[in-house]
Image: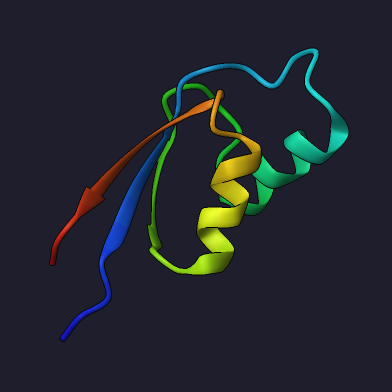
Amino acid sequence: MTMPKLKITQVRSTINCKTSQKRTIKALGLGRLHATVIQPKNPCTLGMLNVVQHLVAVEEIAD
């Protein structure tokens, strides 16, 4: 059984955001508007998404 994955797209800029939110965006592999990454769905990733939920759009994808 494969682990579900998340398609994460940055939809808002990090201008005027807290430093911790900017670092979280960078840790997710994002940094530009409309950039998209695929990350595994695990507690670590979900915690990071909780911090920047107002800056990203998230979709669950199945392999």
